Image (tube, rainbow, N blue to C red; front, side):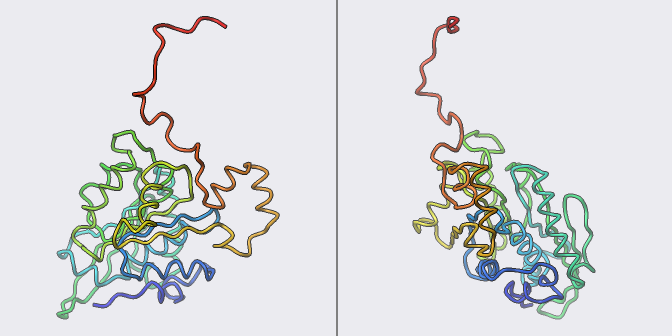
Length: 285
């Protein structure tokens, strides 16, 4: 069966165009997910609508990609994991996805909404005319490579990736999380999609390194987009931006709203090997 393109779904009030008044900049970015790339990195300023766009994309991939439902054996779950620095952030993402579901009569009829996930059971007809029920879900989870292992899906969303822990070596290590995504998508091959979204932070960590590699053309089949808040939302109040700059200071404002990495931000002491230690406690004074 043929899929419904995201570019069509986000403009159709019966699907994903019923509630969010998408800005043209957001529509342009969402349309890139209809392209052939399997890795998408969005480094966007605050208030750009990152999570709202990614939530709509997750609902689309999970419910309107009928071509993906024929890849798995009947009865198996196709899961779209949403990985965030905290489980609470993942649940907030689910809330945004729920808003898209509830605004779409066609999709809502097949949804079972829960706190940490949305389960769908969607009637389909395969290419041979056989009826079956596609079982899909969007699942919130904390940032842990252990949580991702064992899942099978065609899309993984990684939210606020620049805020993950780096250089820890444990399950929450950002590199281990990104490495765990690959096997999740293996069954779907070139149809698999990883969407990594974040504002900018420091010049370290897997998000910054991957973003730099994609920009340099070192990772095939990948695309990176960097856009400031004002580029994504030209109508935003300049008074609001000025107030945020005053509140945050120039460095933090440029990081959060203008996508400029802070040279001092990142992990504290990623390598202790070069440090010298005193033999005892420091004397008073």
